[in-house]
Image (cartoon, rainbow, N blue to C red; front, side):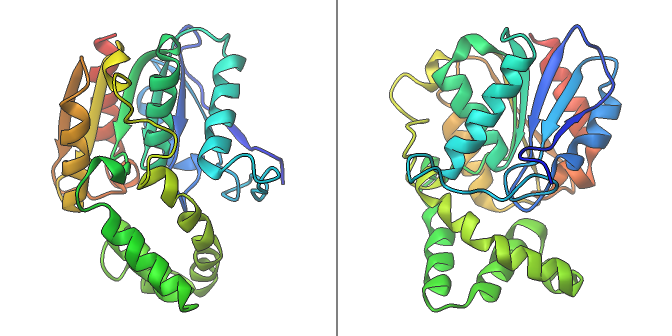
Length: 261
C-alpha cells in the first residue's frame, strides 16, 4: 500500500486535469469518465487517504485535518503537472476540495467542475445529517450511522445490499466521515468567506442528479448565486453517485465546461 496511490489515464497531455473522488470511493470512479474525455484532457486522480490503495490517514500532530490533507495532496498533483492552470474536477467532498483550491489560489484553475459538492455550510438544512450521525456515533451505533450515511447518498437499502466485508470496511471509515464535519458543515477553512467565491474567474459547472437529496440543490443555488461564471446542469434519473451510474452524461457536461475555458 502506497502513501498516496495516483492514477494516470491516457489523454491529451497538452491539457492536464485532476479529479478528486468522494468519501467511501476511490479514484477508479473516474476511469470511465477519463476514457470519454481522453481526446480532451489527460486526467489524473488519486485515492484519498484511508481509501482504495492509499495508506490510512494519520493526523499530523493535530495540525492538519482530513480536508486539509486532501487539499495538500491535490496541490501536489497540480505542482507535478507544472504548476500552471489546469482543469479541476471534484465529486462530493472532492468537489469541496477543488472549490477550496479555487478560492485560495484562483490563478491555478482553468476550469472547475463541481459534482454535488457537499459543503453543507452553504445550506440551511445541511447540519441535520451531521447531527444524526453524531448522535448515533455517541451511542456507539457506528453501523447504524454508516447505514444512514450510505442510504442517503447511495440510495435506500444500499448499505444492506453490500457484501458483509464491504459493509465492515464502510463502518471502519465512518469516523473519518465524522471528522470532516467542521469543514463541511462549519466551513472551518473559509471557503464561503466574503469575496472568496467571487474571486474565481474560471468557468464553473455545477452538476447534480435529479434524484439527489434536496440539500444538494440548495447548496448549488447558494454557490451559483456568488460565482461570476457558472453553469448548472441536472442529470435525469441520477443520484449522488452519478459519476458511477451516468459517466457518459457527466463526461459530456465536463466537456461543455472545458469548452468554456
